[in-house]
Image 1 (cartoon, protein in one colour):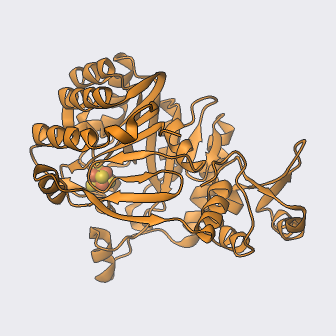
Image 2 (cartoon, helix red, strand yellow):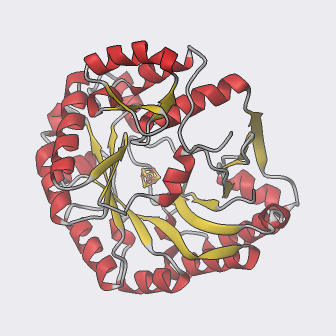
Length: 383
Ligand code: SF4
């Protein structure tokens, strides 16, 4: 099957946030023309893979794609249209930082076909935003949402981070209330983790407290679940909440094991059997494309064991859940008794879904089930 999902990595950021270990290129001035030229070269090389493809979703992620501005995003999506057909009703998402959102940029994004925005909000607490090295303050989040709506972009997702260190004095409840006041279609809530090579990892090495306690993580995750569900959002994936009909189609494709193509530095692709990824450093990606070399950084062919582990994990992280066999029900019933899961019995198949409390144990429960060598995500493609 030709791919129906395209991810484009746009790596530019004004500076590195304190918790971020993504593949980024810190630039005070974004090299828009250099990037777009290189992207076109990479996509020209993929014409064979994209032949016959009709893209249902395009996701501009990063980095900070909004750093390309209005015209740059128009050029990126123009390149996509030159190389592949886009469906009549696609989902085209751009990740944006609040301080990059202005009327002119939004007008260009809409004209280029963007119809969904994932806004990197992270918190409404200015001290916390400063600690995170974010480039925006809390007042810019609401302004950005208003500007997006004024320009015709209603499908807005807000990102927030929980489990911040207590010394920041950030109120999670107040942040959730302020986010809900903006009536976003979608919210992504991530617990802070300390990744190697990040500023907060260095602060931790020097003895600083850089994240909330485990108890704080659990409390904030569960309070977010209760508040969002109470406000009418579906907690449809461990980190994601959506109003009815507003789930992320692109990310949902990842969670069902669909194939996808990724372009740009560090982007990953998956064809149903093999996962491939590009070189990570922007400078190396540019260099290779400039001299006609492949930008492939590596690849991994999934074994039968890999597939089982992935299918179990993907199924359990979403509300779709996972089909299980009769022989597994005894094990799953112990999860049910602990409040971690529910077993549905639709017309044909037994299916387990994790509860919010179960999602706090997602990794260990998925490992437990995958270790039995069983589990098949309902509706997933045969990866
Ligand atoms: S804006 Fe996003 S990608 Fe850029 S440094 Fe911050 S968290 Fe990382």
